[in-house]
Length: 75
Image (cartoon, rainbow, N blue to C red; front, top):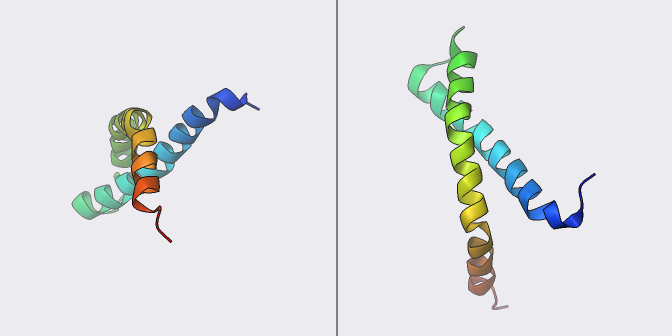
């Protein structure tokens, strides 16, 4: 597998891929319907959205984790 030092990047990759796959499917289906052209529209949406989501998670993921830990420190 991968060395531990790549764990954050792998997590960001997987999280962004799962999130974008589900969200683009839902939004594409809601906006254009599900027909024979749906897979192509969905793939195009993933191709645009995934690099953006991956970059955002890499840029802000650690800060969001720190904020959530700070918000949830009380028992």
